[in-house]
Length: 185
Ligand SMILES: [Zn+2]
Image 1: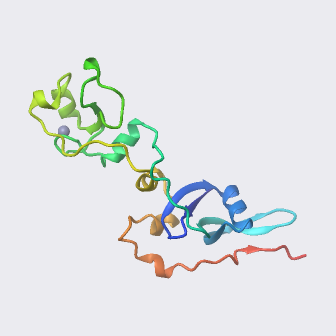
Image 2: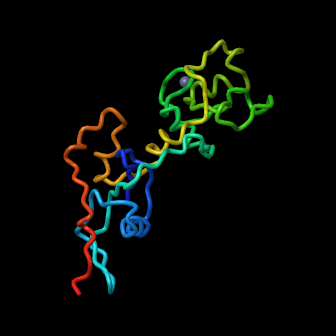
Image 3: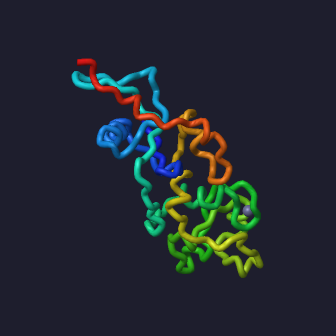
């Protein structure tokens, strides 16, 4: 079971193991926003609900300059699974400057590409095809990318995963640390 970590401003930051989440809560670094009371954690000295969403008590400045590791999946995500040339659904990756002509594996030289465009383009450059890139490929920013890194969001996380500006369920959320209860000695 995983726990979604929200920054103090409610921005989803990362996903951690629930054990890590428990440590963050017990050390006062985070408070429980939502917990799964169906499966409480019990130990000899402690009983608490499994936190499914926690919020940091202090705002952490997102590391905007941290580099996101290059991956095929990452390129597809960055480009929204849309072909950089025609905008159709993309399942492949294209080297803008083909590898055979010195094109590197970099965020700026890789784009999402549909199969049709990939086949047609082959070892040519966009200029030779008289194609235009729909955008200038760049490394993704960590802050924005984090959200997309969550591959299989737990249903309960969905209210927290709506992109900025569209979040509506916030008022309904009450932050509580009461879910962490001391043992009944
Ligand atoms: Zn295409």
